[in-house]
Length: 329
Image 1 (cartoon, rainbow, N blue to C red):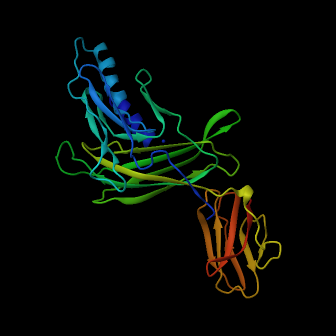
Image 2: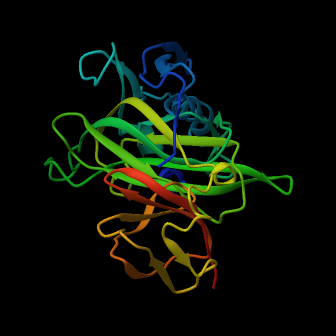
Image 3: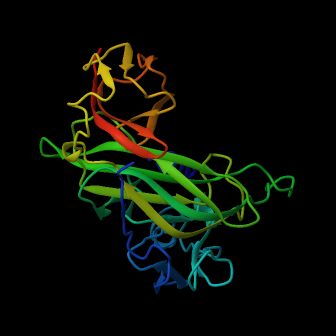
């Protein structure tokens, strides 16, 4: 049964920007139920979010009696709870814990905005659905607190980490395809820390219509018993819409930017621009190049992938020129 655990670990390890609201981002409203029948285990999940413990409990009862006549599960656990004491804001946070589910093995606690599907026949865990979006997401942030669990052999605190995974999807030629991904390890902390996972996209052409976010209390094969992750106040930020970026003074060439398209050295010239700042932005809104300008400048951008970028030139925080930049190879 260890194969199922390792498959699961592999899948959860799967500017002008503005924020969009994440449903129930502060983990304020919850729903409760039960999983299994013998015994019946209470389960919990934030509204519009999902865990995996209910599937594991049901699977243990349905799957193992096939191999063990008269088998009765005795060591099944809830792995996702509403936490009202350890929280960042509001009245509650989400708490998830890595635990052993009877004979199935040890699993990370999971919090996902996508529905989790468990296929015991194929030994696989997949996700479906997610949050609808209207453009590319540059990043996902959250307030988190993490404690690594105990090594089952030494009974000492070991090395473990939480993880957040983000996948952005688009309909490409009629197929639901992943076009952007982000993954970030979450290290131990004694108080809430703010983390940000930046999304990296395959290219500059595809749009985006769905985002799936998954947090897990362990993200590696050496997951430790009782590793615990608290998550609260999740936010996400849209990347700039390049089709809506307006040129500012680019035609007047306060700063001459050439060549465009560019493949290697980008040259910038202008009078009285000493001390101004150049910033080049990727399609996801991240700064990929920056330079303090003099009257004549050159910056090597040969390491940037081919695609469409934007640039801005600012003087003491005020944008004096902005435009699009095409990098070719």
